[in-house]
Amino acid sequence: MTVVGEVFDPHVQTNELLTDARSFPSGTAPRPDAWFVTPTKGTDRAAYAAALGTALAPVHMSAEVGAPHGSSGSIAALDSLTATLALLLVVVAGLGVFNTVVLEIRERTRDMGVTKALGMTPAQTVGVVLASVVLVGVVGAAIGLPVGLLLHGLTVPAMGHSAGLDFPASALDVLGAPALVLLAVGGVLIAVLGALLPAVRAARTRTVAALRAE
Image 1 (cartoon, helix red, strand yellow):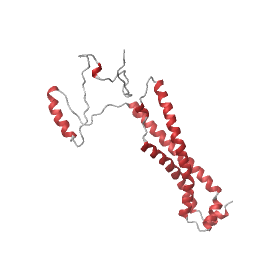
Image 2 (cartoon, rainbow, N blue to C red):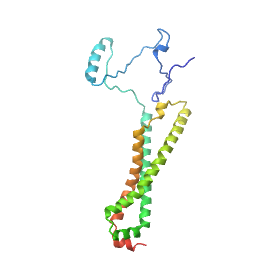
Image 3 (cartoon, rainbow, N blue to C red):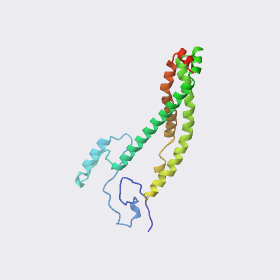
Image 4 (tube, rainbow, N blue to C red):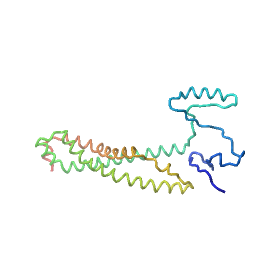
């Protein structure tokens, strides 16, 4: 037997093969029961579907706009779990930055008191604290993105193989350049947001109290 098609349809838990009808011997190809039509740009889809439905009525067929292609509850649950885990990781990363900045400010309270006495404004104090974490965010993004992509490329095929699936490249290349840029910016943003509250508190600290700190 020569396999002439390939299927990647995880929401259908059956053995299926997507192939070209021309691969069947003459007269043996299954008859399709659904067609998906993509109108040209600028076409009124509702009007097109209505006209097509009228034309198909004699053969007991219908036309719908944006008909659902089917979905799986397990896939939706997996997507929800992934989003929840991502949110938790963002919160943990932000709290890690928050804790580090709080400790650093406590250790440098007297130094900040000296700079305040020399004329540093509260806005400048906030800027100094945030600037100290921006570099950390950039380094974290520069290291985390390649490592994350490497782990993705290793773990996802391994998970597929354990289930008897061979994922095509289109199922693995899910992050384009814009998404990677957003993720890198997100790393810096997490660092800044995590340090924002300690920076504001440091800016509000009275100069005399900071100078008296040991």
